[in-house]
Length: 397
Image (cartoon, rainbow, N blue to C red):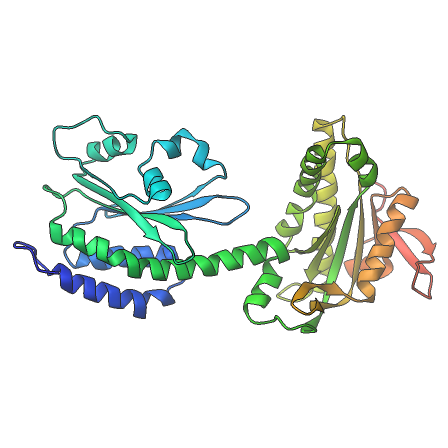
């Protein structure tokens, strides 16, 4: 890349140094937010007059469709998350990112001329803020995804040809590193979505072999929706899914809010654990499980008041014990879950919720570990267990 007259630093030198930094050092930074910040600081420090740089990435996440990180020379970085369905909105259709993503085009506008009627509203906004030159180009990943990368300046006259060549040349090495970080985040996000945070971390750390399990002590919570079969027969499939999601929205967030982990969604059942350890005593683990259970039942009550035509009832079983936490299955199809007699105990207790018309029942072990007064229901014969089991519930209010 020949040096242009008047450029304080050779764009070719900046390209070589920045490309080397991306491959050697940037890939060890935590994520794309940090990479973008360091990249911009290096480029600006080399004399290229960037005042705004953005990275727009498609995201495979259940809660958002994409993420944009915008670096500014005069204020902190913005990090924006976009909802699913963003492609159908006016915000997206009237943004220069659209032709970049959909057609693979590079969009470039000079903002310091006489023109004021721009096709994209954001260009007028940038002009009003003193920007003179804006470019957004495709950032292509090897897996076939096209993202967007933009750069803009306030310098009179805009970017020089050499600076423009620098940015176009740096896109490929930048994309290689950005894709690496995005895939790591994507894999971690997918694992967290489908197997949970703790299990996902263990899988990424290499716990992937069948039979690779560890024993943990934990409070166990099993929530099951009552009359799900009748509801499925009465409602349309779409309505069943919508209602199920309302149910999950009630009972699952309290698990996370109280430091628990959902390890299985079994149709309309939710199995969660609250581990003893990590600075949490056994009594605290049980308190967390009880708090999650009562909050979930309360949320269902609030939901039913808003939707009286389709009331939802659930039974919650709470137990404390030791389980095997890890991989079971066959061949290349494994499940990361918890197994053991204490899981079976929790399941048997939950089935009694319907028979005894109770919303919440705990085992004797859970009640004793909880270290607070509980109301004894009685002794019960649970299938698969030799001894009769004393079961408890919360004292009457």
